[in-house]
Length: 162
Figure 1 (spheres, helix red, strand yellow):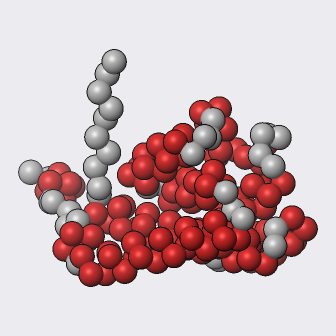
Figure 2 (cartoon, rainbow, N blue to C red; figure 1 turned 90 degrees about the vertical axis):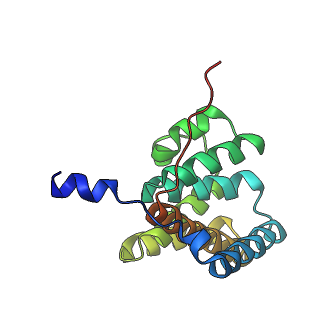
């Protein structure tokens, strides 16, 4: 067996199951953030767009699966989900959604100071302070969940064929 093959055979630890108290704390944070977003006036589809865009950037298959289903349940269209990775190149997203997505990307790549400045410039024109804070917290939280799922290698089971 080659070194690469030996490594790929190793079973990952599901850190959410291994350390349930820590995961429970993260889940409670997520619930508080969801409530904060709702109180700030960020609708459920905007929250799911943030969750999906951050998960795209991080390459988290598990979270992409979970939040695609959640976005569809919240009334998001398959067309908008399909073009989300290229949201800047379409007029399908509102100014508020675009601002929230820019903040989400800047939060996910904190080393890009220009993106942060640009995101804040756009955001301040269309979102309230509460919405800015909530959008950033949504991005922070999904980034944490992405890392849990990526490091645990949570599986994404295929849907049954119809």
